[in-house]
Amino acid sequence: MLIKPLDRVEIAEYLERERWYNGAEFMTYLDNGSSNEKEEIVCWQSYDEAVRYCILNSTDVDRYEVLGVRAAYRSLYNGIKGHQEFVYRNGAIDVKAMVTAHQENLTQGELINNKGEKVMEKNQEVFEFLQERLTYMGFGELVDKDKLSKLIASQATEFELKGKAVYPDGIVGVTLYFKKSEESDKYFFNHYDAELKKIGVKETIKQRFFVNSKGGSITLKEAYNMLQGRSVYKSLVNKDGHEYKAWVTLDRNKQNSNGNYELIRSYKFEVADLIPKYNFKEAQYPRSLEGLIKGLERGNQQVVTIVKGKTETKRLVEANPDFKQFVFRSPETGRVVIESQIKVAPEKAQEATQNAAANQQDQKEVKGQNATADKANQQESNVGNIPTAPAKDTANTITSNAKEPAAKEVADLTNSKGVNAGADTKAKVAGVQNKADDAVNKPNQQENNVGNIPTATAKDTANAVTSNAKEPAGKEVADLTNSKAVNAGADTKAEVAGVQNKADDAAKKKVEKQSPTTVRKRTNKRRMSA
Image 1 (tube, one colour):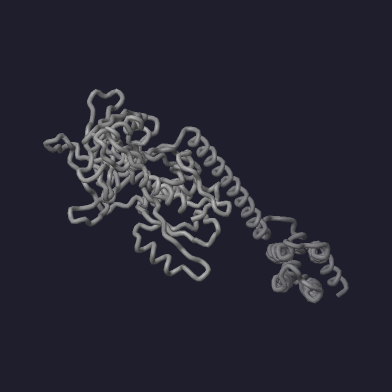
Image 2 (cartoon, helix red, strand yellow):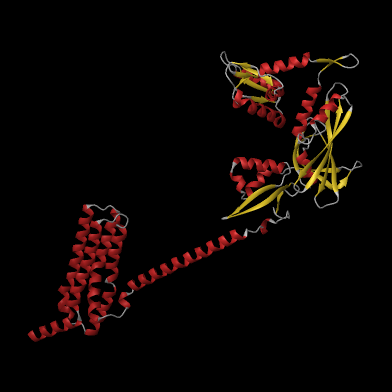
């Protein structure tokens, strides 16, 4: 397998993660003389799956091969640390050639002990095996590597290593137990004891955790979380060898004869299903959401940002599988916070209050403007009910009755053509306006009959008619203005002004012709002529 020299660290770390976190033991790669990218390397848990992939994807030109994951990244790490020379081909690192060279060195590395017996130099291999296991379990930085190497070389049947892990609220002391295999020179990491000493608390909490080669082992951080009373989501194996998943919690009320707490197993609780019920800011991004889910499943207290409107509140959250819910705590005090009582930060609360007050003020102003507009419309519609000069009322009344049908027709024509009314529509509007002018002049033909109307009756009639005069004329101008409002140009403004001027001229003429004084003069003149 060929890789680029600059990719050696990235690919070595990738292969190591795939083995420890996903159980991958084999990988497939393209063997065509070109360098493989990390994305082109596919890892598999079984050899049969890897071989099947190679058979299905290989062609006469492209050929896929299988290589052991552990052997590959170990050879790369040896080259990076200077323990082994890199093998190059076509300017790229040949990982398969490095694996072959490493295996040959192990085969030829024979030593003679004090008794003269030949043994395989397995110490380095055993050390690397244990070191990988300890790193995966979270003890990589706690173990004295030199001491571990010497104990392996001593060929002791059993040995122990001690260490301490410091956390913000306590210290965890650990004792690791190793035992040599009866059938080979290998050593196995079987179990460890963890003891939590909380800051400010005299009593300690101790528990023994067993290491299972088939999976489901409790790591150091998970042990710390369980000693704190939290739960961990693990893949476990029953006595029949079947794998299952469950939340594991220490039962602080029950201990066995060895002083270990019994384990409580909880089922049917998925963190991923509960998160959408809360407005966590971290859930908006795929990577942070994935980290949140994995952290909660490991029993961690995760920091989340709860969003409520424009406010954001920081909280510690942990999983509670027994009640199938989350437990929220204050980051400052660590005390439990009830969900319904989560308070907003003071500066955020003040900002929210100011925003609410501003919104209320805006609403009051809008209501006041609407009330003023409604009042103006009401006054305009009730013009006839407001006492005015009799002569003016009479003229406005006659003008109103004359223009009301015309105004409606103008509005209908204008609305039917929309904003961009053309020349034809303007001509029609002008025709309707002419009709309105004719209707204004029509009362002149009835002038002779006005003298027969009593003064009081004529005045009341004028007031009643004037009541309706300004409403249609005003409506006509408003409708024309609204219909043209978006793209009103010079022509539209002139048209609206023309309609208004005609309405005013008509009203003025009628004021002069139909005032009670003028009517009486004309009536007296006709009587004298008679």
